[in-house]
Length: 502
Image 1 (cartoon, rainbow, N blue to C red):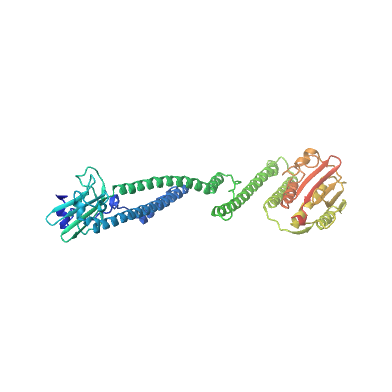
Image 2 (cartoon, helix red, strand yellow):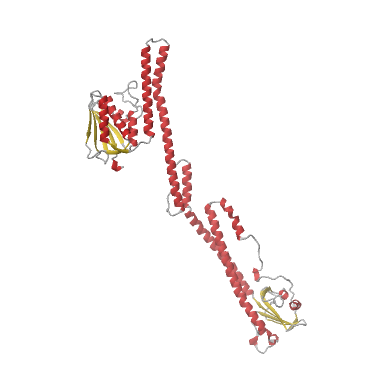
């Protein structure tokens, strides 16, 4: 069929309506935007959000980049393979069956040479006449086609009854331009559906990955949340809280161990400071309480003498000296108690039998008319680990207490034996004196407590001797108790750990 083609001039002259080249199909537009490096550089905003959300954003972003990259690669490969196959068909037609003149006859003799119906063929002669083969209802827009351009994609002509996409190639030989085109609407729709399907799949995969990553990150960061909760509790004063320890091979495990170690050290320091403060407050309170009476006495005797109520200066001076001596003893005992509670004692092997004999020998010289006996029933040498001077002070205070308050005829015995309930060393300081009531025995180790039967504030001691003893025994990881009955005597029971058990 021979017709006048309105696009023949543009095709023959080789001048396309638009000089710029296009990419294939719907992939033609190149979009501009920030580079990936610039976008990563802008990710410093993640520093302002919680760690779990920052990690989630990074995981989703990296996954999205990977999925998009793979989708683009797959789609580009499919497009290239599809168009490569079509381009080969166009080249075969251009160099083969499209050259046959019988193709353009109304009733060709050999139908085997006719192309499939999706092809469009046109011959453009130098005089502008054309021969067209087209069994489709649409035709390509040849305004974008010129000879020698090679295979490329164009849309359907505006005069066509349906929209579509065409793959076109053109060649000029001996003054005749041959144009071969193929309808690729089906292939373009296939690629479009592939792209849409990839987008849907990628969105679904990203949502699934975000959900999985959220739970995994939440589980992985659970120890950090526990660290945070523990730190808040500690900041509010709960120093007994500790971070649950996890695997030692993880960073969180190392952090937990370091934090627990720091908390333990901090707690010990705070407890030590609190103990020091409590000791100081007790010292000040006890001193002010106990010094009030002698100071009142000193002031009273001074005012009595100044007012002329008495002219006996020697009596006033003796009373003032007595109260001053009592205040001096009280201050010394308070300082001794404070040192016993807070000082660090030297530790060495101590033979308790040797210490007991030394105490008995020293007190026997001070009380030559009293009976002081030392007896050991231990299977071996009673050795403990501690401060020999402090343990000597303990036994001295207990024995002196028995000599002073047991009565003038009371006999005192220091008895050492193996504790039947443990492998420790037991020491009993026994006297057969006047004893004390059950009420006095319950409070005998308290500060400034004096048993009414044998002590009075004006004549007795400071009431700190047994408190000092208890503090020193506790410092040696020992224990002390008392058993007493009125009229039958008193027994102080002391237990100290044996050396091999420490």
